[in-house]
Image (cartoon, rainbow, N blue to C red; front, side):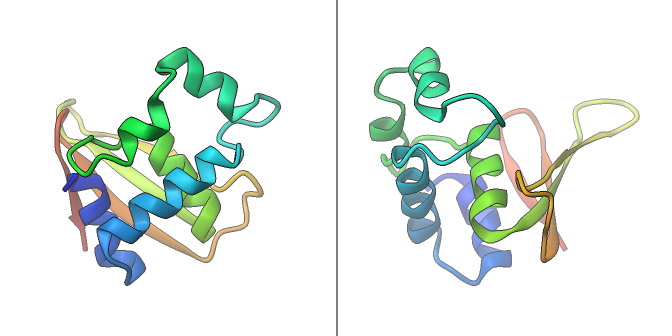
Length: 116
């Protein structure tokens, strides 16, 4: 199981498998991740089998899945990059910019952890 989906599950009150599948469904249905660009186009540039690979429980999630989660659950996600000094943060907002709550996670370059 991917640490990103496990981290999100602590905040969304859903199991990580369900979160992964909802995100993959969102991407498969061409849900927006970047305004004015087709999601399918972006994913094909990354990997023509992107969604199929992402449904695999051992595939790591990243920025595309974080942005998708923001859009699906209307949340803001703040990612603290603990590799940089001083630590930098990356803010992900739903495309409509209307969010219900904020989730904080940290990223160490290959691993996500929830921040409570």
